Amino acid sequence: MNIQTLRMQLHFYQRMMIIAKTAGDLVAHEVYKQITRELTEQIQDKEKTACSQQTA
Image (cartoon, rainbow, N blue to C red; front, side, top):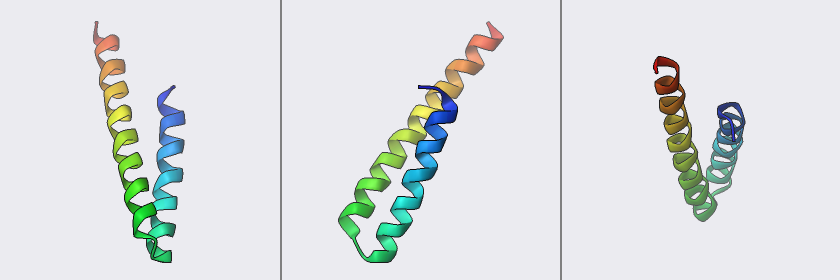
């Protein structure tokens, strides 16, 4: 999966997290928070890999 797709997914889940929090659904909020953390880590890893490949 490319970085742009991951960023689109991250944006979607961040919005869902806010909606769940506003609705008072704390379980869904925590699930979406975990998903956003994982997506953020994936994006950072891919950016590091892309950066290191460009310098090599």
